Length: 276
Image (cartoon, helix red, strand yellow):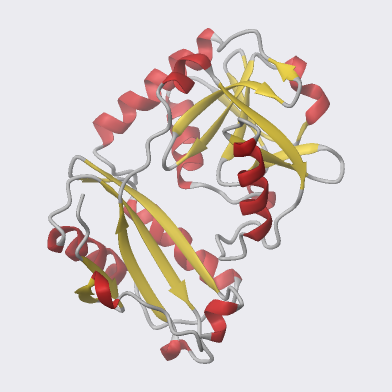
């Protein structure tokens, strides 16, 4: 897809003008938050939930700005139409300033990334690293350690890296949320210690509507043998089943997890990208 335009504070401009000044101290120091949305076949998924989290992230960083949720949604839709996009990812960057009126909101379109389809039937491999993110509920630009962990995991043939706390509990991935499954119970870390992904929210909703129980509790790394399987969730990958975590291997992708993946995919189709 050819991307010709981006948005800055609601003004649609040629992509050649997309630049951030070298003198922007807020950007240099990572004083900003971001969101990534999915747009597929003219369907924009869960826009209100993503914008809500963008504003929550800004609030947690005490990043003041003059924008409203309604305006951000309007600007996203305008940019999609201006680029005549059919399928893409949408990145929102909200960069702070000394005052609220110095904040800048950028919206840009990116070509979509699709995971290897074989991973959905064969399962993905991940490795672990000790790291707890600062202000975990905020999707901030402070991504250095996550970036390094993800890059290392990729070099080692892994899909992602899982973050462990000091007690060896699994928290989340560098850019994913983590779930374990036992029979028809899904277990995931409490939302106050992780970034509550929009896909995580949707997974919980779909699970509850299909007779699954949800437990929000810490999952010790050495307890993996107690579960039938595990999976990651994210905007780009939806539900990614896991077959191996470090040296521990699950025997297979459990039948309950396969069934739930189908239920989740069916919900995406029926919802048309909207949840209330």
